[in-house]
Image 1 (cartoon, helix red, strand yellow):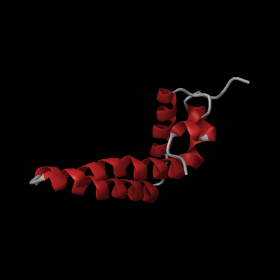
Image 2 (image 1 turned 30 degrees about the vertical axis):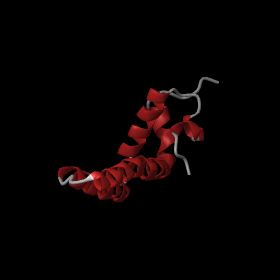
Image 3 (image 1 turned 90 degrees about the vertical axis):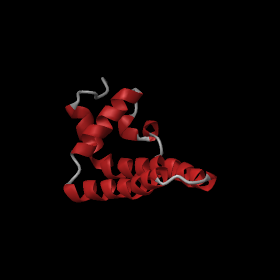
Image 4 (image 1 turned 90 degrees about the horizontal axis):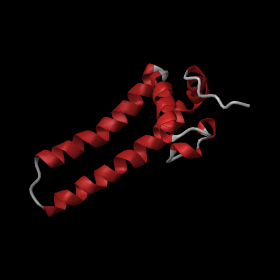
Length: 101
């Protein structure tokens, strides 16, 4: 499980902006059911977060807001990398970011 893009073999040798560009392109190539799963997970975290912010009443709500803010990238980034991994090499070559041998 990859929590950071610099640990993914297909993205080695790229700077941060290039890695994110390849990941975005790979995400665009995902089939609709996989995109749906990814977006539903994101919504499952974001909707409660915004509901808590909108109905903020006490300091205990701040704890839940902080938990959801931390949970969002911890859950969505590894899942995004896992779902996009089969498309990363193709996306990298389409963007002409292949390593020069």
